[in-house]
Structure formats: C-alpha cells, structure tokens
Image (tube, rainbow, N blue to C red):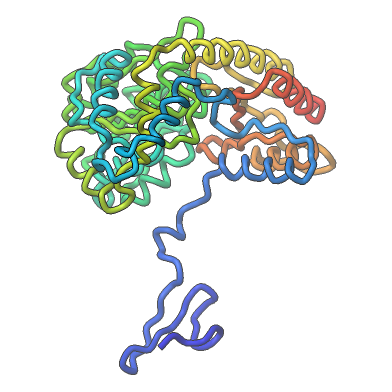
Length: 421
C-alpha cells in the first residue's frame, strides 16, 4: 500500500511502500532525470515572454531562432499534406522515404558527403537527433570530448545516455576553436567520441577547412567517433565558410554521425524536423529506439521539410544577408561598451561577448560578481534578456542572438550600454 503523505518518509522527495510487510523507500523522481537542469536558453526566453505578457517592454536576445516566417512554398506544401489521406496515418519510423532521399541528396550538395537514404533517420527536431545519437552510441562511462563554450543541452544529453562529458575549454584568444593538441591530451582509453560543432552555438566561431580536416584525420587515426552538428551550415559571413568534416575526410564516415535539421536554415524551429545520418548499424539501432519513443515525425511537418530541403536556397540567402548585417551592427555596438570584449560573429546568429571586465561592480543598485548575476540585473532593471555564459560552460561571457528586428536590436544594446556605462 502507498503510505499517506508525511508518514514513514525519509525526506520530502521520498515515499515508503510496504510489500508483504517489507518497507522499501523510493524517490518520486528518478535520479537520472532529477539531475537534468532546465535548458537555460529556453528558461531565459520563457521569463522574457512572461514579462512581456505582463506588459513589460522586454527585448529578448535569448532565443536561438530566426525571426522570419517559414518560406511560403514550405507552408503551402504543409497545407496540401493536410488534405492528403496518405499523411493521416502512421508512416515509417525513420521518415518518409522521399524525405530521406531528399536529405541524402541535400547532404551531398551542401556537405560533400556521399550517403544513401537508408543512412538517414528523421527526428523530432535537431535536439531529438542529438538525443537519439548519444543514446545509441554511448555505453556507461564512455567519455565524450566536448569543446566549450558548448550548446547548453549537449552535456545533459550525454550524461543522460550514461556518458561522461569531458569539457575542453577554448578562449576568445584562439577564436573559441579547439586544437588537435588539446584533443590528444584529453584522449584516454575511455574516449568514445568527439562532439564537433561549426558554425558554433554559442560563439559564432567557424573552423577553417584545414583545421576541420586535421581534426577529422586525428579522429580516424585515434579510432574516435565524431558527432558533428551541422545545423548552422548555411549561416556563415564574410570570407568564413562551412566545412563538413566527413566531407573532407570520407574515411571518417564509418565512425561519424551527422546531425542537422530544417530549423535554422529555413526558419522552421516550430516544425520540429531534424535528422541524423550515420553508419547502418547506428541507423538501425536509432530507428529501434525511436520506434519505442516517438515513432514517426509528424507527416505534415515532414512534407514541409521535403519542400524545404528539395527547393532552392533563395530564401536562405535573404535571411543570411539580414543576419550578416545585424551581426555586424551588434558587434560594433557591443565593442563600444567599456569593459566588454567581443569577436565579430563568423557564423550562426550569435555574439558571445565577455563581461569579465565589468564583474565585481554594482549595477542597478546591485552587486554583480558573475555573468549570471549580470544577466539577472539586465533583465530586472534594463528589461533585456541575454543568456549567461555559465549555461555554456563559459562563466564571464553571455550569448546574444541577433535573430531579431533591427530596431529591437539597437534599442536592446543601447539599454545594456546605458546600464553598464
């Protein structure tokens, strides 16, 4: 029987049950799930939206999503799919065959990687692809090399899969890029994989092709898996260009998983369509996992994704041009704030300034000793939402998205400068 609240408990989160006269105690929430931290980026965005709904004039730099609408031809494809009885029923767990084929062709076009439709698993967004991948390749206590600053969800997903994130710090001085020497020094007999991201969230850094190839060849020589997240592939600026590691080092493909999706490139964050591309055994195992979790991705969303990846990149080009202009504007405005240091964004749609020169001072009548505290003051006093560097393994920094309108961008940075000036 279940004991009433307050009776025979060893703590507020535990209950004691009696089975055949023997008492056993259990936590209400499993230890592995209780250890997960809320996504900091989503938490900041949610708080900003709550304040906005309460009438506050909040400017949010927190969300990592384009502010553009999804291209019309993609929306029209989804509308048509709603009326097609074929899409009213279950479809194959790893994705619609025509979408998997289109993703394989798009990957050859954009990444230079030869793969087949059979190597593609369509997932419920890019985050689901990350989750599936590490659940599939991680054994208990496998070490995963994670260069920092990193996207906030990576360590949580790795830990949930039983892996151990081995964080490799990078700095503004080296362009937030990990080196082969760092990787080699961190490698142990328990190292299973390297998580590689370029263009980077949160720093906006883009690795030169020579560096990407060198890291790929190091991984091949070491027999290390590479999980490469290519979600920001089309968002690079000036003379910086995306390079796909398995495209440059084809022999890596037997130990490589490519992660991608339609969210960033096609302004489709809400449609929840991503994918993973990998060796046959990984794809089979990930498909089996997905068959017991979500089954197929929404067919209507898959039809929309098919129109996106199968179409041209004209809409993408227009968005990238706008992001390039906004990123340069944000960089110039932030650079004028005394005590702030920032690199010009090379890719994605983020600036990642250092506020270390301002810590230990008072702002808005409050003492600020960390970037987390600074972000709290900025939201409470200046009504500006940015994400603290602690969420990305980089205390002293913060992430600002420039995927918002020009007027809000200028006003938001002006408020930051006014508070910190």
